[in-house]
Amino acid sequence: SSDLWDLMVAAAAAGVAARGPLKKPRVLCLHGRGLNGAYFRGQLAGLIRTAPELDFFFLDGHLPAEVAPEAAGAWKVALKPGDRKAWQYFTLRKDPAAVSAASRWQAGHDAADGLEKVWEAVNKEAATGGAFFAALGFSQGANVAAALLARQAASSQDLGLRCSVSLCGGMWGFWDETPQTWWASSDRPPELPLSGVPSLHVL
Image: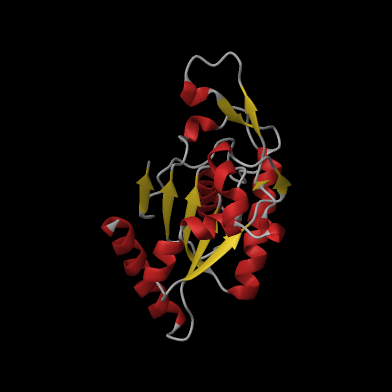
């Protein structure tokens, strides 16, 4: 969309000014549960072609998962045999007592550990390959992108993230009420959206 393009280009211009003309601004791309970076790259192929000034980096989840139902038909067609492992960043648990579809799925009890592993992986990649100016997440990846921005705001570590694009992301209420040690400064994450952080949400 034009809004997505405008957000990316504006942030890219700021990134180029800050980093110099020889370094492409980097976009951290986070796939949905039951997918992987290679599949998400294919989903974003049109955007990538129209934005050669950006460096799109795809981070795979670290936990195995079943292939997402919506991708099952295209999985073997779109991906080479070596790229067909499906991943997730944390597990989900189904709440049989949920009264609405929106609250049917909850983050698993390993969410804090999963997010910590993602935080460490992104920090490592930023240190070796360069900081990220934007996070672009789909479904579970959109939740992870929001969590990374919140963690960055609550800590002294700066991944470089200055904006985000959320594709089919869940509501923040997706998380349960249990305090998480992952939030360094309080029992609850910072309120979202974060002040001063432009974000585009596509449902």
